[in-house]
Length: 91
Image (cartoon, rainbow, N blue to C red):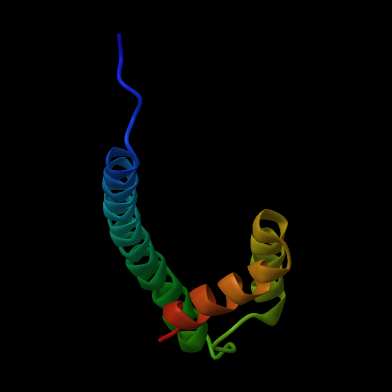
């Protein structure tokens, strides 16, 4: 017969579960950072090309499209996410 779980054991399970989840988040964050660095490189390439052609450094219409995509996935906070991504990816 199985003994009932003790509160201490449950707390240990929770601690281990949180610890693993935090490790997972750390790994995800590193992946996001790698992707943002790649995105920044592509964005800077576009910006350089536009500037060489005497165009504007940014394209507000394109930025609005990007914000709309983030908003569709994250609701109202998508605007903040898009703004942070765009800011991080500018030269």
